[in-house]
Image 1: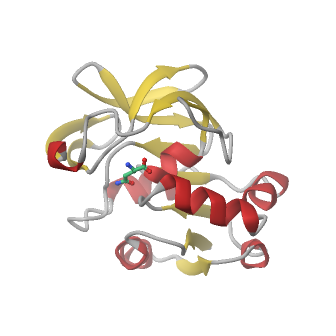
Image 2: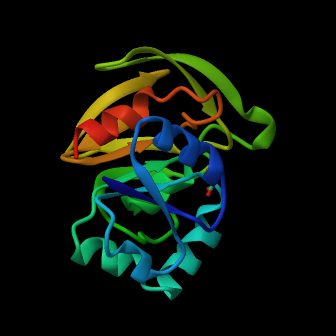
Length: 180
Ligand code: GLN
């Protein structure tokens, strides 16, 4: 199985190492034509406005939707795959959630927390200028923090407000792969 990682910004090699450790081939996606052979797609964190405009310019969101490629989005990746972004526009409307960018505050308010993730158990989440999920429409909440959803799935798509890749823990990536 081949999985694409959007290679515009963020922890591309960290995600790549985790996916390869789980036995899948990784394709770094820079343009729409890189999507031809992938069975799933990972969108890392970074700056969603920058990633979103580059992606859109290159026709990547349209191709993901046409080919119905399942997406796992972390942090900015989740913002990009949300149907409703407060004060912004949706780039790849796959998850029926409303998002507030930087909902936990500025860079200084970044934090780590022990989360309880359905199907996984305890997981150390790193929230870096993280978005807050304000509403979940269709979909299943897999983890919460302070009363707010921090991980949501809908079918094969999976979105999380935190970074799962920093400590090299592969369990959330594995969950995504198992759903494909
Ligand atoms: N604050 C960033 C944004 O709004 C997301 C931060 C992240 O991906 N760690 O795009």
